[in-house]
Length: 171
Ligand code: GTP
Ligand code: MG
Image (cartoon, rainbow, N blue to C red; front, side, top):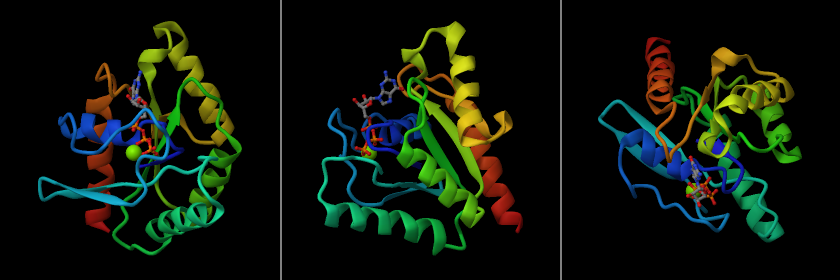
């Protein structure tokens, strides 16, 4: 689970596993400072990565967090893919675009989870998602609109993650 600080990674993990407080969430960005790993029913591991792009951390801490993310993206042959969270209300930031380039460079399979869908009117959600996908240059069959609060898209994202890990198992 990869995304800028405060995008909703920990909340989405809780929604995916149907638990209220497995992963620690916070209104303050920068809550998750390490890489927390959750084992899901003997089938897969979900990794809650620290958020990137949070301005209010020291230079050294930002480098450390970047290294944690890099290690997960590049150093693990068991990585089935990345769920890349993008806030549906925001245009992708410079940090998002830099991350997108890193994902493409490493050839990591990516699923986009647009987060906080409940914050945008039903009629605008799809347009917002399409605009975001255009900017990050990914196709709509690799994207799911989600809301950890309303439960929108959670089943669809679960299925997409399982499909990714099945492919990984078959490789
Ligand atoms: P870091 O660990 O700091 O990188 O943040 P995170 O990406 O893990 O975000 P977290 O899950 O802690 O959520 C950040 C804030 O967004 C909290 O106030 C959540 O309640 C809120 N939030 C998360 N998901 C949703 C959602 O689907 N809808 C709404 N409305 N708010 C959400
Ligand atoms: Mg978090």
